[in-house]
Each structure stands twice: as C-alpha cells, then as structure tokens.
Length: 172
Length: 250
Image (tube, rainbow over all chains, first blue to last red; front, side):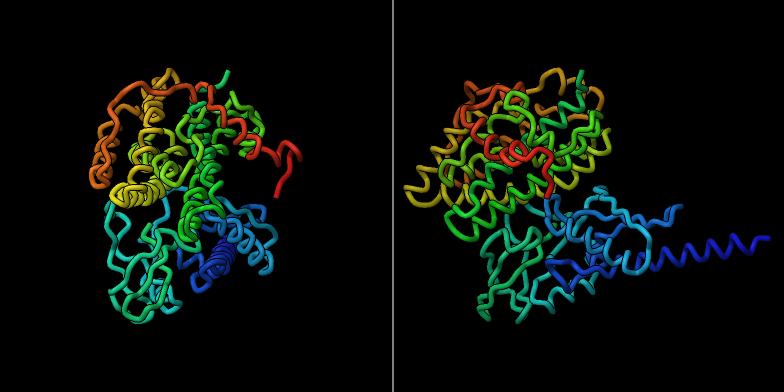
C-alpha cells in the first residue's frame, strides 16, 4: 500500500536533484568560467504540484544586467531538459556576498586571469586597499587603476612586476 | 488615501532613480574612460535599487502599478526625491560632491534600515548598504584627490561643496510619514545618522584640505514635490519612451 507514494516521493526527490544540477551548471554570461552554482546565486529549487520547477536566485549586484540573462538561461536549460514549465523567483535576503565563493571558484577565476576577492567582505575599511595578487605572475606589486571595471563585480588593476593589466573580482 | 509605507518606499525609489538618471548622463562624457565606466556602474546600482523599491511600492499600493508606471508615468509634483539627487551634474567636482554627500548619508541609512520591521525594506537595504559603501569610497577618494590636488582642482572641489551644501539639510527632514513609520520600527530616524554623516565628511574633507561650510539656511521642498527648475527637463528625457509608447517593454 505504501510503495506507490514512497516511489513517487523518491522520483520527486530525484527530479528536484536533477533540476538543481541543471540550474547550477548555467554559466555566468560575463565570467563564463563560473557557474551560478559556484557563485552562490542559486538559492533553491523546488518542484511544484503542477510539475513546474521553481528556482530561487539572488542578485550579485542589484542592478547587474547579467541577472536577466541568468533568468533566461536557467529557464532554457530546464525546458530543454524536459521540465514542463519554469518559474524564477528573485530573493534578496540574505544578501549575496563574495564570501560565498568556494576555494574552487576562486581558483577558476585566477586561472581565467581574474584576481579573486581578497579578504572578507564583512571586514572592510572605508579606505585603503586589500593586497591583490596578480593572477598571472602572483606578484603583490600591483596597483588599482579604477574602482570599477567592465562589469559591476570587477575593478581594474595592473601588475607592476609583469606589467599586465587585470580584472579584480571585488570583495562585496 | 495612500499609506505611509507606500510614500516612504516611493521616496527612496525616487532618490535612487533620479540619481541613477543624473549619473547616467555622464555616460560617454566622463573625463576618463575608467571614470566613465565607474559613474555608469554607480548609476546602475542606483537603478537596480530603484527597481526593487518601485516594485515593492507598487505591491504596497495594490493598485496594479508596476515599476515602470511609477517611474515613468508620474508627474513632476508627484516625485518625492530630495533636491540633492536632482542637482545637475555640473563639472566633475559637483558630481563627486553630490555623490559624497549622498552616499555618506545612505551608508548608515541602509545599514540601519536592515533592522527594519518591514522584511522587504530590510532585504533591499542589506544589498544597497554594500553598494553605498563602495560609492562612498569612490566619491571620498576623488574628493581627497581633487581637494588636495592642484589649485584648479581644489578650487573646483571647494566650489562644488559650497554649492551643494544647502541641499544636505533635506536628508535629515522627517515629516509625519517618517515619524509614524519610525514609531512602528519600519523607518530610520534620519536625525540619528547626523553624527556619523558629519564624522565621515569631516574625515574626508580634512584629508582633502577642504573646509566644510558652516551650518546655515537649507533648501527644502523635494519630499513634497517642489523641485528645481531643471527637474522637469530630467523627467522629460527619462520618461520620453514610456510617454511616447505607453506600456512599452523591452
């Protein structure tokens, strides 16, 4: 008598897990070495009664234009995988922080030529910079060119040892 | 009858949207490429905050107005932003002074609003607070660089501070809407932010070798819809698309 609901529950759990994995693999359109799973942008995935998948994401920066691309890409990926309909919800709390970037994600950034955030977002000073290591040669002889870079999440730096300009993923 | 929460949220949204629009005017015109990108980035943060706040205001109002309708289809006298944010860009120093005064206020404001009994405002504040910290750092560093720079840059930075100073009083105004919401634990009492605001400005301006103007007569009117002459021109540009093509979506 109990086998059917149990099987259904197991199926639902497996489907949810599958949906989660598919959503988590969606790459960041602006920093394609990172996925939304790496970033911590993906918050929750739920299967609804009507078979739809509901995905919670949290914005990195409130005005980040990549968020609308994220939304479309997640929807496309899940629809392609056979889920009948997808709903994306944006949740603001708790606020996203670069502290959630895993060691693996930081290493991916470095390999891609972007210096990962130095230090903890929770311990920030009004002025004064963190020590940022050049993602190419590793030198700490670096200087900030601009507080802002090509996307909301990055600042522009340059290495005085190897002369390379590079992006720095800001502590946020 | 509009609720206090709607009015309060809408004012915050208007502050963010109008400052975002002003900063956006620099796009393609800033003194250097890096700063062009920088100001556009700050503008984007403000527009993002405005979107969240307008959407929430629309929800609170419950009359079916969305973020676009609230931002693009209201008239000049219906906007409740403070006068400071609508002041024209002027030269680069004026833009920096405007940003310094505003972000030095908004950083502690958002920090305090994260403790609001209104969960949505608290959540919006938690995101905005980090952005404000970065804006303050950006405008603070420029104030120091320009103030403690050449005779020309110093004179311009001082002029900008003197010019915009009378618009800072409005940041601390609290009418019935604010008072009632403070009592409910929803809003922030702006007076409680004054010491930190002054201390931040003193720290930056000391290092910039710029004296701060004495307290004095302050401009007022933005919160009740009485705006500067240039404000109508700002709206005509900002609202053009929705006015010309009502209901248009990207």
